[in-house]
Image (tube, rainbow over all chains, first blue to last red; front, top):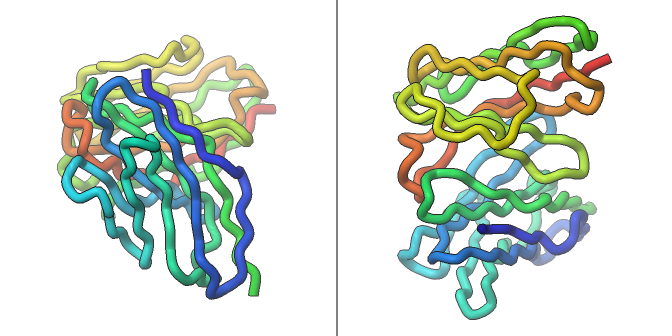
Length: 113
Length: 115
């Protein structure tokens, strides 16, 4: 069975500060990992995904994530937060048993001016 | 229309009503999904259809009945719902339901309120 834990249901940063959203997973096989973003009243949009190629994955809007197998982590970072980054972020894992995603509980990112 | 669309965007229904949610994808995908997003709970996968065949039913109560007439359309028929079924229902699609690296594309969701 696979699972995802997102530490911190709410994260607040100042505009221009580093964004770090944490994700730890468990999976019995090498996983595929995804980060999605959800803006208010919208569906989920893919930010980036790890599919066993490069361990540092670059996504849209300046976000990136690093797959660390030894730590079973896939934390999401952005060097400088922008007001428009305020949203809810979801980490998800998919194993080799078909294209079914298991989501973490989500982290709401707030950006202060 | 592009991407994944869902109608209606908002729905209020009584516990004795029957209603349906509709999802349509314009991406040429072969797999479609229903998710439930409740406050303070992770997204829950409800159903998966791959090439119009249901491949996953995640222990969903029978008051939710999915229908997939073709690879582009997915319905969720609702009857005798409970107030705890109030949630955002998200539809998604992907190239197929077999390869775990395929990205899922989500619709905007239907906000359901059961009175």
